[in-house]
Image 1 (tube, rainbow, N blue to C red):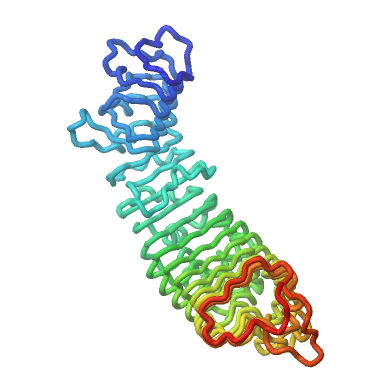
Image 2 (image 1 turned 120 degrees about the horizontal axis):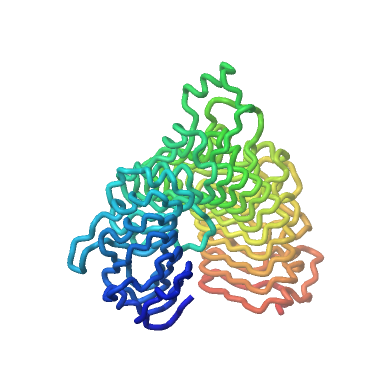
Length: 538
């Protein structure tokens, strides 16, 4: 490897040289060389952040197998026929902006026209600056590795080619008329589709072995109704036992690890149940701004009696899904037919049709579901009256953070939901934020109705209550005594707040010290506050 110098001499005397890497070099003079300055039998040529001539004119290196040009600044311009003359080329890697033009003032020529002449090409890493006519797909059929972006994404779109994710086959497709690239979509490990008419469902319907290696899928602002469903003909044939699903397990989406759907205004659901059961590797699911989405999974009309078990799902984020009612269309809740044994993060925002997260019945089913949950974040779920039923508290022993905001019907963060089950303390809970809850009157801190003499959050450290105008006090005296780990407390903009610690009961000791670890206390805009309480606060 040669680095940090100005190349002004020929390397041809190095006749046995097979690999040449130029790193941070000035090679603007190579176009002016009278003779080829590179060894004739060179097989690998890499330019890493070099000063290149504009346009670049490489000699006919008939043995060259790999050409890589990595530019941190600016793009790459090449003289016409430079690429197509490299007849032995197997790897072409130019991930930055790449153009073919005779001189600086000339109109760029189609890039693909030259690439299609590389009959030995096996690996392509390329950024097409502008859309081109993808007609000849033969060159794509032979690719073993590819990392392609078409065309330039806008500033607000993530650019996948340089994410550092270790994949060998990646696509980022923006815009329409890219059907010729479907042959690559079927085999990709990572895909971003944005504002494109490429339809994942149509591809899967035509080829049930498509997406077998897909690990990361991002779909932004595409007009699709679903990702994968079974046709009526397939359902009919299965019901007649002409096809036995148990003998034909699907491999599509079986390696999918991250799925992100955003701004798909026609999306109604993602998968049929039989495909959902193949999502054994799914770790992150994020759905944002899909106003017609009613469910994540739908029942296609057949059932094998088994629930959908998302063994590895750790993060579930559902945002701005105005019609979302359930995870599984045929059920009334998110828990009974779908198991989440490894879920750690649950984030639901602006989903006005959800009235119950867990399900009102069968709390004893799927006992492993949610048992690893660490964080619950709920915003603008306006039909929720409570968040955690007593029957769920035994499962939530790993819950660390509870954040509930702007849920206008919420009366309490915990509730019975009609089940006569004793509440269990959430021993791992460290942070609880309750904000913008106009109907909140009872919590696990100020009411013994839920806990009796037991403290539900014995290890709470951070408490934030803001704009809860029906709440009259924060703690009951008995519960306040047990919150020995509380370090930070903020209570703000609560119009009905009369006291921080409620009235003591007969026989309570009044001279004991509360909150021995409290280091931050903020009380702001509490117009009816008359006292903190009758106890000493350290």
